[in-house]
Length: 423
Image 1 (cartoon, rainbow, N blue to C red):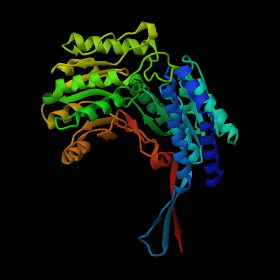
Image 2 (image 1 turned 135 degrees about the vertical axis):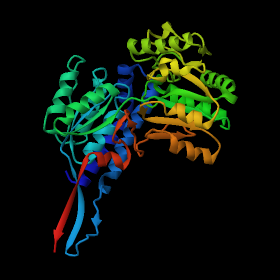
Image 3 (image 1 turned 90 degrees about the vertical axis):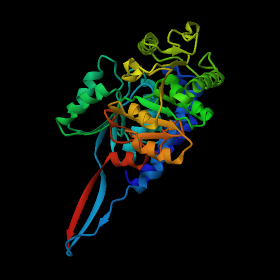
Image 4 (image 1 turned 90 degrees about the horizontal axis):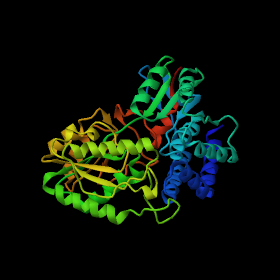
Protein backbone atom coordinates (compact mmCIF):
# COMPACT_ATOMS: atom_id res chain seq x y z
CA UNK A 1 0.00 0.00 0.00
CA UNK A 2 1.13 3.55 -0.74
CA UNK A 3 1.75 5.98 2.09
CA UNK A 4 -1.57 7.81 1.77
CA UNK A 5 -3.54 4.58 1.49
CA UNK A 6 -1.95 3.39 4.73
CA UNK A 7 -2.80 6.70 6.30
CA UNK A 8 -6.52 6.41 5.52
CA UNK A 9 -6.46 2.80 6.71
CA UNK A 10 -4.99 3.84 10.06
CA UNK A 11 -7.61 6.56 10.38
CA UNK A 12 -10.48 4.14 9.75
CA UNK A 13 -8.98 1.67 12.23
CA UNK A 14 -8.70 4.36 14.92
CA UNK A 15 -12.26 5.53 14.24
CA UNK A 16 -13.52 1.97 14.74
CA UNK A 17 -11.73 1.75 18.09
CA UNK A 18 -13.53 4.91 19.14
CA UNK A 19 -16.88 3.61 17.88
CA UNK A 20 -16.42 0.34 19.82
CA UNK A 21 -14.74 1.74 22.93
CA UNK A 22 -17.32 0.35 25.38
CA UNK A 23 -17.07 -3.19 24.01
CA UNK A 24 -13.27 -3.09 23.91
CA UNK A 25 -13.19 -1.78 27.49
CA UNK A 26 -15.53 -4.57 28.57
CA UNK A 27 -13.23 -7.17 26.99
CA UNK A 28 -10.25 -5.65 28.78
CA UNK A 29 -12.08 -5.78 32.12
CA UNK A 30 -13.23 -9.36 31.54
CA UNK A 31 -9.71 -10.55 30.70
CA UNK A 32 -7.75 -8.53 33.28
CA UNK A 33 -10.13 -7.68 36.10
CA UNK A 34 -9.26 -4.03 35.48
CA UNK A 35 -11.94 -1.51 36.59
CA UNK A 36 -14.16 -0.58 33.65
CA UNK A 37 -13.34 3.12 33.99
CA UNK A 38 -9.63 2.28 33.76
CA UNK A 39 -10.28 0.05 30.75
CA UNK A 40 -11.92 2.98 28.96
CA UNK A 41 -8.71 4.94 29.48
CA UNK A 42 -6.76 1.98 28.08
CA UNK A 43 -8.88 2.06 24.91
CA UNK A 44 -8.16 5.75 24.47
CA UNK A 45 -4.44 5.14 25.00
CA UNK A 46 -4.48 2.43 22.33
CA UNK A 47 -6.31 4.77 19.95
CA UNK A 48 -3.77 7.54 20.57
CA UNK A 49 -1.05 5.43 18.97
CA UNK A 50 -3.05 4.87 15.80
CA UNK A 51 -3.84 8.59 15.60
CA UNK A 52 -0.17 9.48 16.01
CA UNK A 53 1.16 6.97 13.49
CA UNK A 54 -1.52 7.96 10.99
CA UNK A 55 -0.24 11.53 11.08
CA UNK A 56 3.41 10.46 10.86
CA UNK A 57 3.16 8.07 7.90
CA UNK A 58 3.85 10.69 5.23
CA UNK A 59 6.74 12.17 7.20
CA UNK A 60 9.20 9.29 7.05
CA UNK A 61 11.62 11.20 4.85
CA UNK A 62 15.02 10.30 3.47
CA UNK A 63 17.87 12.79 3.13
CA UNK A 64 19.96 14.40 0.44
CA UNK A 65 23.60 14.38 1.54
CA UNK A 66 26.35 16.62 0.08
CA UNK A 67 28.80 14.26 -1.62
CA UNK A 68 32.55 14.57 -1.14
CA UNK A 69 33.10 13.70 -4.80
CA UNK A 70 31.84 16.42 -7.10
CA UNK A 71 30.58 13.93 -9.69
CA UNK A 72 28.42 12.00 -7.20
CA UNK A 73 24.99 12.59 -5.64
CA UNK A 74 24.11 10.82 -2.37
CA UNK A 75 20.64 10.34 -0.95
CA UNK A 76 18.85 7.99 1.43
CA UNK A 77 15.44 6.39 1.39
CA UNK A 78 13.54 4.50 4.09
CA UNK A 79 11.95 1.19 3.17
CA UNK A 80 9.78 -1.35 5.05
CA UNK A 81 11.56 -4.36 6.52
CA UNK A 82 8.94 -7.03 5.66
CA UNK A 83 7.36 -9.27 8.29
CA UNK A 84 7.45 -8.00 11.87
CA UNK A 85 6.71 -10.32 14.80
CA UNK A 86 5.21 -8.70 17.90
CA UNK A 87 5.02 -10.47 21.26
CA UNK A 88 2.84 -8.47 23.64
CA UNK A 89 2.16 -8.67 27.41
CA UNK A 90 -1.06 -9.13 29.36
CA UNK A 91 -0.98 -5.94 31.44
CA UNK A 92 -1.90 -3.59 28.57
CA UNK A 93 -3.41 -5.86 25.92
CA UNK A 94 -4.79 -3.11 23.66
CA UNK A 95 -2.16 -0.38 23.64
CA UNK A 96 0.80 -2.76 23.46
CA UNK A 97 -0.58 -4.06 20.17
CA UNK A 98 -1.40 -0.69 18.61
CA UNK A 99 1.97 0.65 19.77
CA UNK A 100 3.83 -2.14 17.98
CA UNK A 101 1.55 -3.22 15.13
CA UNK A 102 0.37 0.33 14.47
CA UNK A 103 3.92 1.57 13.96
CA UNK A 104 5.00 -1.46 11.91
CA UNK A 105 1.98 -1.29 9.59
CA UNK A 106 2.26 2.49 9.27
CA UNK A 107 5.84 1.91 8.10
CA UNK A 108 4.60 -0.50 5.43
CA UNK A 109 5.26 -3.88 7.05
CA UNK A 110 3.00 -6.84 7.79
CA UNK A 111 2.69 -8.05 11.38
CA UNK A 112 2.39 -11.41 13.12
CA UNK A 113 1.25 -10.75 16.69
CA UNK A 114 1.39 -13.26 19.51
CA UNK A 115 -0.59 -11.82 22.43
CA UNK A 116 -0.15 -13.02 25.98
CA UNK A 117 -2.02 -16.31 26.61
CA UNK A 118 -4.02 -14.52 29.30
CA UNK A 119 -5.48 -11.83 26.99
CA UNK A 120 -6.24 -13.20 23.50
CA UNK A 121 -9.67 -11.62 23.10
CA UNK A 122 -8.43 -8.02 23.08
CA UNK A 123 -5.93 -8.92 20.34
CA UNK A 124 -8.54 -10.71 18.23
CA UNK A 125 -10.94 -7.78 18.60
CA UNK A 126 -8.29 -5.34 17.35
CA UNK A 127 -7.58 -7.63 14.38
CA UNK A 128 -11.30 -7.84 13.56
CA UNK A 129 -11.59 -4.05 13.61
CA UNK A 130 -8.52 -3.80 11.37
CA UNK A 131 -10.26 -6.12 8.93
CA UNK A 132 -13.45 -4.02 9.07
CA UNK A 133 -11.35 -0.90 8.41
CA UNK A 134 -10.29 -2.43 5.11
CA UNK A 135 -6.97 -3.87 6.18
CA UNK A 136 -5.66 -6.20 3.45
CA UNK A 137 -5.62 -9.94 4.29
CA UNK A 138 -2.33 -11.07 5.78
CA UNK A 139 -1.20 -7.62 6.95
CA UNK A 140 -2.22 -8.07 10.62
CA UNK A 141 -2.16 -11.66 11.86
CA UNK A 142 -2.87 -12.80 15.43
CA UNK A 143 -1.64 -16.11 16.85
CA UNK A 144 -3.32 -16.80 20.19
CA UNK A 145 -1.79 -19.74 22.00
CA UNK A 146 -1.71 -21.43 25.38
CA UNK A 147 1.00 -20.94 27.97
CA UNK A 148 2.31 -24.41 27.10
CA UNK A 149 2.82 -23.42 23.45
CA UNK A 150 4.26 -19.97 24.06
CA UNK A 151 7.89 -21.11 23.94
CA UNK A 152 7.33 -22.98 20.67
CA UNK A 153 5.76 -19.94 19.02
CA UNK A 154 8.60 -17.78 20.29
CA UNK A 155 11.16 -20.16 18.83
CA UNK A 156 9.38 -20.13 15.48
CA UNK A 157 9.29 -16.33 15.13
CA UNK A 158 12.94 -16.12 16.20
CA UNK A 159 14.15 -18.77 13.76
CA UNK A 160 11.87 -18.16 10.76
CA UNK A 161 13.84 -16.22 8.16
CA UNK A 162 10.64 -14.62 6.81
CA UNK A 163 10.47 -12.62 10.04
CA UNK A 164 12.81 -9.63 9.75
CA UNK A 165 12.13 -7.93 13.10
CA UNK A 166 11.00 -9.07 16.55
CA UNK A 167 9.38 -6.55 18.87
CA UNK A 168 8.93 -7.89 22.41
CA UNK A 169 7.58 -6.53 25.68
CA UNK A 170 8.07 -8.66 28.78
CA UNK A 171 10.58 -9.73 31.39
CA UNK A 172 14.31 -9.16 31.08
CA UNK A 173 14.99 -12.89 31.41
CA UNK A 174 12.75 -13.81 28.49
CA UNK A 175 14.04 -10.86 26.48
CA UNK A 176 17.62 -12.09 26.83
CA UNK A 177 16.63 -15.55 25.65
CA UNK A 178 14.81 -14.16 22.59
CA UNK A 179 17.75 -11.88 21.86
CA UNK A 180 20.10 -14.86 21.69
CA UNK A 181 17.68 -16.76 19.45
CA UNK A 182 17.29 -13.82 17.06
CA UNK A 183 21.05 -13.36 16.84
CA UNK A 184 21.36 -16.68 15.00
CA UNK A 185 19.80 -15.06 11.93
CA UNK A 186 20.87 -11.47 12.72
CA UNK A 187 17.22 -10.48 13.08
CA UNK A 188 16.40 -6.90 14.02
CA UNK A 189 15.00 -6.61 17.54
CA UNK A 190 13.35 -4.02 19.75
CA UNK A 191 12.64 -4.90 23.35
CA UNK A 192 10.88 -3.19 26.23
CA UNK A 193 11.84 -5.16 29.33
CA UNK A 194 11.62 -4.89 33.11
CA UNK A 195 11.98 -1.80 35.24
CA UNK A 196 12.83 -0.79 38.80
CA UNK A 197 11.88 2.87 38.67
CA UNK A 198 13.08 5.27 41.36
CA UNK A 199 10.80 8.12 42.43
CA UNK A 200 12.74 10.89 44.19
CA UNK A 201 11.14 13.53 46.42
CA UNK A 202 13.57 16.33 47.30
CA UNK A 203 13.15 18.52 50.36
CA UNK A 204 12.24 21.53 48.20
CA UNK A 205 9.46 19.67 46.34
CA UNK A 206 5.80 20.59 46.35
CA UNK A 207 4.86 17.63 48.52
CA UNK A 208 1.18 17.63 47.61
CA UNK A 209 1.98 17.51 43.90
CA UNK A 210 4.63 14.85 44.54
CA UNK A 211 2.10 12.71 46.43
CA UNK A 212 -0.41 13.03 43.58
CA UNK A 213 2.29 12.16 41.05
CA UNK A 214 3.36 9.13 43.07
CA UNK A 215 -0.22 7.86 43.34
CA UNK A 216 -0.46 8.08 39.55
CA UNK A 217 2.89 6.41 38.97
CA UNK A 218 2.81 3.73 41.66
CA UNK A 219 -0.83 2.67 41.83
CA UNK A 220 -2.02 2.97 38.22
CA UNK A 221 -3.23 -0.47 37.07
CA UNK A 222 -2.75 -1.61 40.69
CA UNK A 223 1.00 -1.21 40.28
CA UNK A 224 1.17 -3.63 37.36
CA UNK A 225 3.09 -1.62 34.76
CA UNK A 226 6.78 -1.69 33.93
CA UNK A 227 7.13 2.06 34.54
CA UNK A 228 5.49 2.07 37.99
CA UNK A 229 7.61 3.67 40.69
CA UNK A 230 9.29 0.86 42.63
CA UNK A 231 11.75 2.62 44.95
CA UNK A 232 10.44 5.81 46.59
CA UNK A 233 13.41 7.94 47.69
CA UNK A 234 12.37 10.75 50.06
CA UNK A 235 14.63 13.36 51.65
CA UNK A 236 15.03 12.71 55.37
CA UNK A 237 13.82 16.22 56.24
CA UNK A 238 10.36 15.51 54.76
CA UNK A 239 10.31 11.72 55.08
CA UNK A 240 7.66 11.37 57.79
CA UNK A 241 5.58 14.28 56.53
CA UNK A 242 5.49 12.88 53.01
CA UNK A 243 4.53 9.42 54.27
CA UNK A 244 1.48 10.81 56.05
CA UNK A 245 0.57 13.00 53.07
CA UNK A 246 0.86 10.04 50.73
CA UNK A 247 -1.40 7.99 52.99
CA UNK A 248 -3.98 10.79 53.00
CA UNK A 249 -3.81 11.12 49.21
CA UNK A 250 -4.29 7.39 48.70
CA UNK A 251 -7.29 7.34 51.04
CA UNK A 252 -8.94 10.23 49.21
CA UNK A 253 -8.19 8.95 45.71
CA UNK A 254 -9.30 5.34 45.45
CA UNK A 255 -12.74 3.78 45.50
CA UNK A 256 -13.07 0.00 45.86
CA UNK A 257 -15.85 -2.33 44.81
CA UNK A 258 -17.18 -4.04 41.70
CA UNK A 259 -14.95 -3.42 38.69
CA UNK A 260 -18.11 -2.69 36.67
CA UNK A 261 -19.10 0.17 38.98
CA UNK A 262 -17.97 3.33 37.20
CA UNK A 263 -17.19 4.99 40.54
CA UNK A 264 -14.55 2.30 41.25
CA UNK A 265 -11.01 3.18 40.17
CA UNK A 266 -8.83 0.50 41.78
CA UNK A 267 -8.91 -3.19 40.93
CA UNK A 268 -7.33 -6.51 41.89
CA UNK A 269 -3.99 -7.92 40.90
CA UNK A 270 -4.20 -10.07 37.83
CA UNK A 271 -3.14 -13.43 39.28
CA UNK A 272 -2.48 -15.34 42.48
CA UNK A 273 1.19 -15.47 41.45
CA UNK A 274 1.32 -11.67 41.34
CA UNK A 275 -0.48 -11.48 44.67
CA UNK A 276 2.01 -13.85 46.29
CA UNK A 277 4.99 -11.88 44.99
CA UNK A 278 3.64 -8.56 46.24
CA UNK A 279 2.86 -10.00 49.67
CA UNK A 280 6.32 -11.59 49.88
CA UNK A 281 8.00 -8.24 49.13
CA UNK A 282 5.85 -6.58 51.78
CA UNK A 283 6.60 -9.21 54.42
CA UNK A 284 10.31 -9.13 53.59
CA UNK A 285 10.50 -5.35 54.05
CA UNK A 286 8.59 -5.41 57.35
CA UNK A 287 10.76 -8.26 58.67
CA UNK A 288 13.85 -6.14 57.99
CA UNK A 289 12.70 -3.02 59.79
CA UNK A 290 10.13 -1.50 57.49
CA UNK A 291 7.13 0.24 59.07
CA UNK A 292 3.71 -0.36 57.51
CA UNK A 293 1.60 2.83 57.41
CA UNK A 294 -1.56 1.22 56.05
CA UNK A 295 -3.86 -1.48 57.40
CA UNK A 296 -6.52 -3.94 56.18
CA UNK A 297 -4.64 -4.49 52.93
CA UNK A 298 -6.02 -7.87 51.87
CA UNK A 299 -9.72 -7.59 51.01
CA UNK A 300 -10.91 -11.12 50.26
CA UNK A 301 -14.50 -9.92 49.95
CA UNK A 302 -13.39 -8.09 46.78
CA UNK A 303 -11.64 -11.15 45.35
CA UNK A 304 -8.77 -13.51 46.16
CA UNK A 305 -6.20 -11.24 44.50
CA UNK A 306 -7.32 -7.90 45.89
CA UNK A 307 -4.63 -5.90 47.67
CA UNK A 308 -5.30 -2.33 48.76
CA UNK A 309 -2.50 0.24 48.28
CA UNK A 310 0.24 -0.21 50.88
CA UNK A 311 2.85 2.26 52.11
CA UNK A 312 6.01 1.05 53.83
CA UNK A 313 8.64 3.27 55.41
CA UNK A 314 11.81 1.28 54.85
CA UNK A 315 14.80 1.52 57.16
CA UNK A 316 18.21 2.90 56.19
CA UNK A 317 19.33 -0.70 55.48
CA UNK A 318 16.75 -0.90 52.70
CA UNK A 319 19.43 -2.19 50.31
CA UNK A 320 18.94 -5.56 52.02
CA UNK A 321 15.25 -5.64 51.10
CA UNK A 322 14.01 -7.65 48.12
CA UNK A 323 12.10 -4.78 46.48
CA UNK A 324 15.36 -2.91 45.80
CA UNK A 325 16.49 -5.71 43.47
CA UNK A 326 13.18 -6.95 42.07
CA UNK A 327 10.24 -5.23 40.44
CA UNK A 328 7.29 -5.65 42.83
CA UNK A 329 4.57 -5.29 40.17
CA UNK A 330 1.98 -4.58 42.81
CA UNK A 331 0.43 -1.67 44.78
CA UNK A 332 3.11 -1.25 47.45
CA UNK A 333 5.04 2.01 47.88
CA UNK A 334 8.37 1.40 49.61
CA UNK A 335 9.86 4.64 50.95
CA UNK A 336 13.63 5.02 51.44
CA UNK A 337 15.22 8.06 53.19
CA UNK A 338 18.20 9.98 51.78
CA UNK A 339 20.12 13.09 52.84
CA UNK A 340 21.78 14.61 49.78
CA UNK A 341 21.16 14.93 46.05
CA UNK A 342 24.28 12.90 45.35
CA UNK A 343 23.08 10.10 47.62
CA UNK A 344 19.67 10.03 45.94
CA UNK A 345 21.20 9.74 42.48
CA UNK A 346 23.58 7.02 43.67
CA UNK A 347 20.72 4.95 45.11
CA UNK A 348 18.56 5.56 42.04
CA UNK A 349 21.32 4.35 39.73
CA UNK A 350 22.12 1.21 41.75
CA UNK A 351 20.28 -1.02 39.31
CA UNK A 352 21.07 -2.78 36.06
CA UNK A 353 17.58 -1.81 34.90
CA UNK A 354 17.08 1.59 33.34
CA UNK A 355 13.55 2.09 32.08
CA UNK A 356 12.00 5.08 33.86
CA UNK A 357 12.64 7.42 36.78
CA UNK A 358 10.70 10.25 38.40
CA UNK A 359 11.57 13.13 40.70
CA UNK A 360 10.05 16.24 42.22
CA UNK A 361 11.89 19.48 42.92
CA UNK A 362 11.17 23.20 42.64
CA UNK A 363 14.76 24.02 41.66
CA UNK A 364 15.24 24.49 37.92
CA UNK A 365 18.98 23.84 38.27
CA UNK A 366 18.42 20.59 40.15
CA UNK A 367 15.76 19.59 37.63
CA UNK A 368 18.29 19.56 34.79
CA UNK A 369 21.14 18.12 36.88
CA UNK A 370 19.12 15.15 38.10
CA UNK A 371 17.35 14.51 34.78
CA UNK A 372 20.72 14.21 33.05
CA UNK A 373 22.28 12.10 35.84
CA UNK A 374 19.63 9.38 36.05
CA UNK A 375 20.58 6.22 34.11
CA UNK A 376 17.24 5.55 32.46
CA UNK A 377 15.60 5.89 29.08
CA UNK A 378 12.71 8.05 30.34
CA UNK A 379 12.55 10.70 33.05
CA UNK A 380 9.45 12.26 34.58
CA UNK A 381 10.38 15.58 36.18
CA UNK A 382 7.45 16.79 38.26
CA UNK A 383 5.11 14.35 36.54
CA UNK A 384 4.07 10.83 37.52
CA UNK A 385 3.16 9.60 34.05
CA UNK A 386 5.68 9.55 31.20
CA UNK A 387 4.06 7.41 28.51
CA UNK A 388 2.41 9.06 25.49
CA UNK A 389 2.00 8.19 21.82
CA UNK A 390 4.19 11.07 20.66
CA UNK A 391 7.06 10.22 23.03
CA UNK A 392 9.87 7.69 22.41
CA UNK A 393 9.22 4.95 24.99
CA UNK A 394 12.00 2.58 26.02
CA UNK A 395 14.90 1.85 28.33
CA UNK A 396 18.63 1.31 28.52
CA UNK A 397 20.85 -1.40 29.98
CA UNK A 398 18.81 -4.51 30.87
CA UNK A 399 15.52 -2.66 30.37
CA UNK A 400 15.78 -3.18 26.65
CA UNK A 401 16.68 -1.55 23.35
CA UNK A 402 14.84 0.43 20.73
CA UNK A 403 11.95 2.85 21.15
CA UNK A 404 8.17 2.73 20.77
CA UNK A 405 6.11 5.86 20.22
CA UNK A 406 6.98 9.04 18.34
CA UNK A 407 8.85 9.11 15.03
CA UNK A 408 11.45 6.76 16.51
CA UNK A 409 8.82 4.02 16.53
CA UNK A 410 8.35 4.19 12.76
CA UNK A 411 12.10 4.34 12.20
CA UNK A 412 12.47 1.10 14.19
CA UNK A 413 10.55 -0.68 11.41
CA UNK A 414 12.22 1.00 8.44
CA UNK A 415 15.56 0.24 6.79
CA UNK A 416 17.74 3.10 5.56
CA UNK A 417 19.14 2.61 2.08
CA UNK A 418 21.90 4.88 0.80
CA UNK A 419 21.93 5.60 -2.93
CA UNK A 420 24.97 7.06 -4.68
CA UNK A 421 24.55 8.23 -8.27
CA UNK A 422 27.45 9.14 -10.53
CA UNK A 423 26.80 11.98 -13.00
